[in-house]
Amino acid sequence: MRWAEMTVVCAPEATDAVGYAFIQAGCGGVMLRGDSPVIVQSALPVTDELMQRINELKAHLDRLPEFGLPALIDGLTLRYAEDEDWANAWKQYFKPSKVGNRLVIVPSWEEYTPAPHELILELDPGMAFGTGGHPTTKLCLLALEESVTPGMKVADIGTGSGILAIAAARLGASVVFATDIDPLPVKIARENVALNRLSETIPVLETMSFDIAAQDCDLIVANILANTIIDLAPSIAPRLKSGGIFIGSGIVTEYHDAVRDALQAVGLELLETKSDDIWVCLIAKRV
Image (cartoon, rainbow, N blue to C red; front, side, top):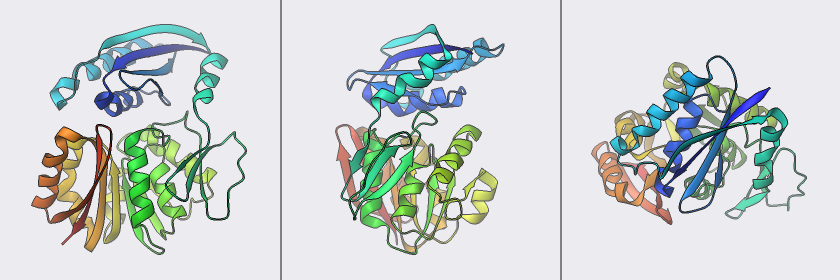
């Protein structure tokens, strides 16, 4: 099969939104290079639907300023590659990496011998957005390591590759309800959950089933966009027990106050803000 390899160049604060746009267009994953600016690459199979998908992707990317994000620095460029070229290209960028004191993200094709205290998150990062390399994912992983205690009921909104749900389970959560609005991440998260032998602990659910199951939670994590967290805040708070913890990221620094205010308006009191460059992660408690 031939693949259409697509490349855009964007500002760091637009990386999450650009990656999500690729996923919504039907891409199986994204590859990031550079820090400022960031080169984002992905691919689609060359089929009859290719141009329609590319046009939808362009339309999505053109709307970045509507969400308070900078426009692309360099628009979408296209080249064609053979199947094996694209399938293996991104693997060179992903190696085992430790986050915090215990969590280690290990690509499924890599050998790694963990120390006794380390918890392995096995992942195939070419399959979905969310490899642990982005600052927002690292911030959420650090917050989870500090907040999850054995036996907790956890929910992961916008699960992507399933990495945060897998981390919560490894840290001792008894059940983690995960969901995503896009069918592709739901499929991929299920595959990564199975890879980690956690299918009984982490049900990856469609939105309607998630809404029913994810109630009375001890902790909720959402690594999505700031505007989405603001929109979802009224539905997040009722899912938490009194004293339950919310961890939210995918937020650039300039939106910190807006997200904080939205959380406070629904009874979630800010406990801590973690930051990495332009990105922040808010930890709040239901009061």
